[in-house]
Length: 77
Image (tube, rainbow, N blue to C red; front, side, top):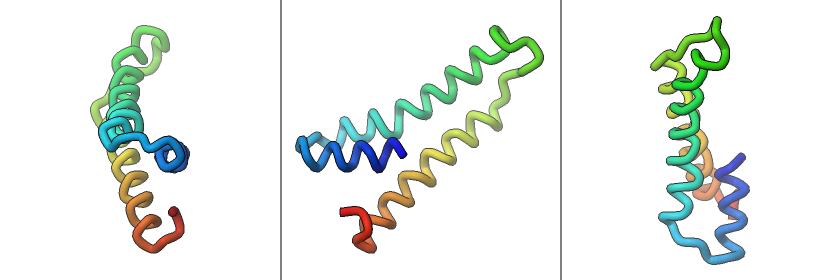
């Protein structure tokens, strides 16, 4: 959802590609890692797992690829 929302905002305000990458790709990956690190500190029964963070990264990449596909078939303009 962040990618779709930012894409519409970027088209209206002529935002550069670096801003898109930082906001829509890097920020969710870093946030997912931070959640995994902080999880055992605040939620005792939970533990940090690398697999969960890799799942977050995979979700971000799949969302980005879906956006590219929708742009290619002209659904997202």
